[in-house]
Length: 299
Image (cartoon, rainbow, N blue to C red; front, side, top):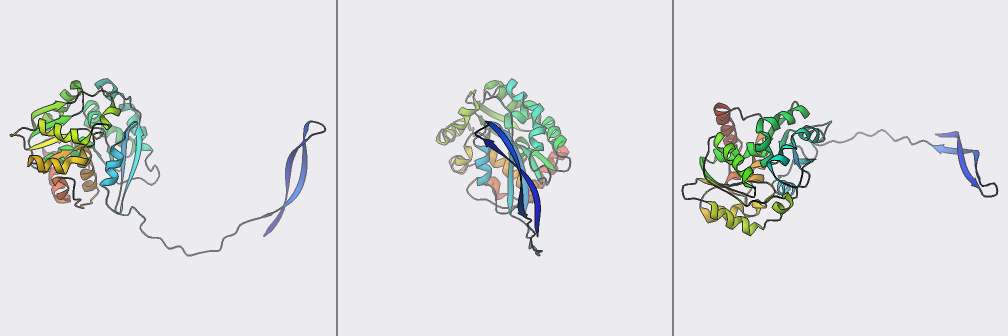
């Protein structure tokens, strides 16, 4: 079909130094596609879609999540404003922005699971407070946090007495210890690197992380927990378990294990510690135990 439609064109008249308008007639061709019967499949992320709220300056979490994502699972990210200093005061300032950040993740089509990825932020703001913020953004989604995943991971592994290594300032370490003990763990040792800036946490050498975790371990500890998703602890978790002869839980490993199991994905992923040998059934047992012992269960 061809339509005759008038169009106005403006050109510059050099002699007068003014714009001149001229009406011309142009022939426009309308596009009309042929009807076609479209073949659809389940899409690339047919098994599950998981959303993550990460810190504005984060450099490690996304890489680790991609390493731990099985085929058929989609991962989607949004960022929340955060000062580069990891102090109690600056961590608390994230709280008002979590809901807005979460609302940007697939706003029309949604996700199956939504997770807040900051360990220290979860503990400073409060696990229940973070969940309320996520719920304000997404009413019908299964919700979790990285620390929710850590608690479930340690319980699933049968660890009650734990040694904890962190990069944090001691004002944050005190909150970490209290959080874990409030969830029923006995922290036999906790040591922090006293790093103030998040950007420096991302740059800690994994070989140092391995040596540091060994130095924090105690014979009576049933597991070692390396706290903070910005640390590249996933790189050394399997080696550390070989060194220590006990389970080692690191933040991004526990977080992704938890998110996948909440989504009903039970894949065992080799090379990232004993935790990923445990499937959906074991995870559900941990969730059930938490439901009986505390209010810290949401999915």
